[in-house]
Image (cartoon, rainbow, N blue to C red; front, top):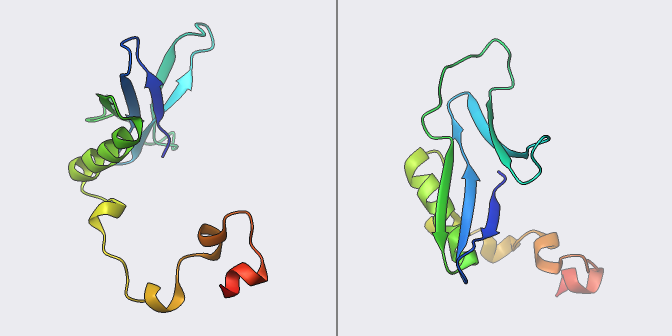
Length: 119
């Protein structure tokens, strides 16, 4: 899922624009080709046979002073509204992680090597 985090004209304030899914439709943000300082919200199904005259919730907009918290808040609101997923904060870790650990790439990032994997 894509989203856009912007700094507003009010000092220290940010807004997060979060396109949503609804049924067979998804919304996305795209630059406007004719007006370079504008964004378009596009809604499509990816199937020319699927048509509608509207979409209930196309975008979520949240604002606040902490940009990282905005991301968590936007995902939490979307999870509650849509009811189709849970955020990491609402999930419990699997006991299997005590034996197998996290993904090697997540643990080592770009410095994957045998000594780091053994560690």
